[in-house]
Image 1: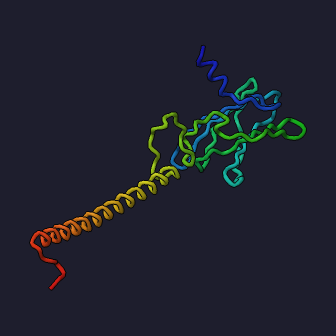
Image 2 (image 1 turned 60 degrees about the vertical axis):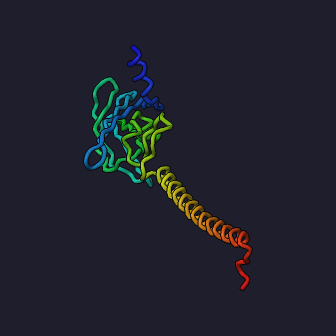
Image 3 (image 1 turned 30 degrees about the vertical axis):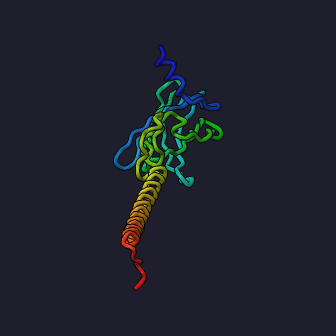
Length: 187
């Protein structure tokens, strides 16, 4: 019973004549394959799904198949893997077509992890960031700066250690010369 309720929450309610819609996605070699479902009120001649990619690149419309009782569904192959926006077009027997608002694939229930440009959401704050992400590059620069700082400290420690040992040798020579009653710089 709980799984049925959870599935109902994944349905995106739309404005009339569109009732609700969902989508699933799978990666394929040349992009994504979407399975799109939309419920409509009335008896349209056709229902189309239209997609917009990044930069408002319009993807070719795809006609959905009538499954009866207002349920329309179809498979949409998309040549890109991104969280595109989809809209639905209701084409009636007579009159003007009605177009829904645009919804992202994640709005329609697609898991964000499928998109190449969007890192998957995660609950684990201790997980490492991949090197190619901005967060991963930031950690890389921080590591490089920490390494440079460590090398600088080692160099300073070495230089100060050499100076101290030189000062100690000079102090030892001066003290031994003082014990002998001679002055180190007097001829």
